[in-house]
Figure 1 (spheres, rainbow, N blue to C red):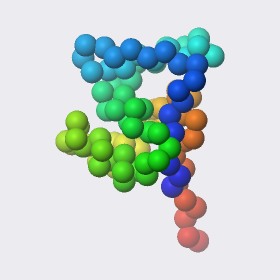
Figure 2: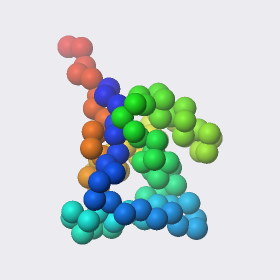
Figure 3: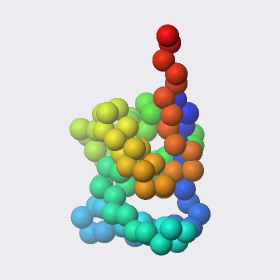
Length: 94
């Protein structure tokens, strides 16, 4: 799996009082409201962390986070076009 990297260009972000992150994409003129876990993953995804590293780092603020939840957060970010480099699974051995 490659190391996911969140987009930083063309975005405006503001943390809400309930821990969510409101992100406005200036390119698509769309807004996104990220869950607290997805917001954490968005901030942590700097292209240097593996899925395991992201999971470990996220558990500091989200103790119940596991690899499955981090993958779901990455999928949410990718679907919203908030990742420069999406996480990709290695091909399965056949």
